[in-house]
Length: 390
Image: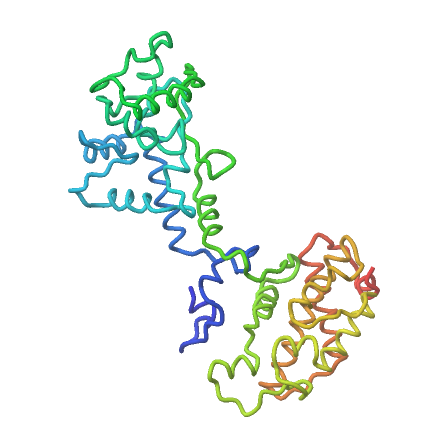
């Protein structure tokens, strides 16, 4: 995937201009949104743990339970230490933090109906963690550690201790304090005739999906301080990716190539021969680019953009004074203009074709019109209206 992104299918090793962690970040976090396979794998593995809880009557769940459950097993997902295999690897992966310090048992929660399938002590249903972790001293006194909710909630309040199976009644200060806190929580639990359910708290729907889990994993892994900008939807992806690289100063300009130890005779801007060729200079300070921007601003009837970096250029549309559809069109034209200047620069460097300002400007209008008309719903938009920027 990395080689294809930077080198296509040609032979030889190409330069990777942006780290893969940055490439795999979502677009709104400053990346390209290419899926990170490790996160996809973790989301797919988490699905098996979810299915183990919601498909409790399935044959495969009963088989796993029969193999891995034992008398001393008190885990949310059973896994016998003496056995290997795929299921133990799944449990080991799920037991790692999923989002920050949150583990799988913090994200899945039992919703009690009739209380016949949710384990009272072992499953997370009343608190964020299973009750065995919240009330460890009471759990140590419990004889039936795998009892379900219905077997404990059904006790009459006139005698709260009735129906519980203790090794000995709680009598120490710690045990009585835990018992008091547990009784307060259980006071608001009401059993119904409906079945017990499971809820995935990481999604607003309450249902597990690989997509939402992957998005949460990436959200947790992403650096919130990265440079971002708003992509334009009506221009091709290649133009957006070009602008993304330029914002990061990852275009193969002469200065950037020299930083990567490529021997070049000169680092001057090939279009104006005045100043070193960086992305910021090429699109904001170059005299050739300035002449193009003057024509674009005159055509679109907007003020000349005051920019000191490429990011300033791609965000200039916000201060153009335009509104509605004109604003959206101008946003795309800004990126198309930069892309056309880069193409003209490459024609000069690689083919010795000296660019002309008027030709580049006409190409920007023509390409912009074709893309806008064919990539939006404005199929009846005319060339005359486009030339007048109506």
